[in-house]
Length: 144
Ligand code: FES
Image 1 (cartoon, rainbow, N blue to C red):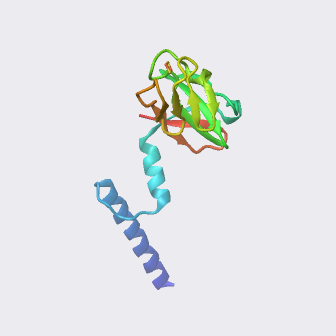
Image 2 (cartoon, helix red, strand yellow):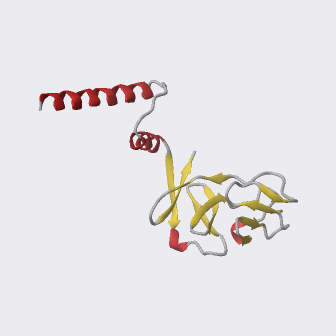
């Protein structure tokens, strides 16, 4: 019984030491759940809409907290990028979605909804995208 108590106390001490090391900017292996909660505590998130509000074959424009973004879904995954096309006045939520490609309805340039990478000119500048955070019902993004 005493040896189990000592063993538990030693593990607890080890966990505390790991957390202290990480907080000081050191690198150590820590339990993933500890790391996740530390990261989530430091980042800002924004809930955009419910997942069931996003149509399957087109974008959904959301304006919230000084952001204007286009939300897309493909094969059950959700993607978010700035709505205003980097080439001009086109609204990507009004574009034509084909798989991972969104074609701007203004000059027919295209972007990859996963990365914002330019897929077709006249667009030259990649589109800003946002990391979508796992959530059971809502589309939630990480914001800077
Ligand atoms: S405004 Fe989008 S391609 Fe020109």
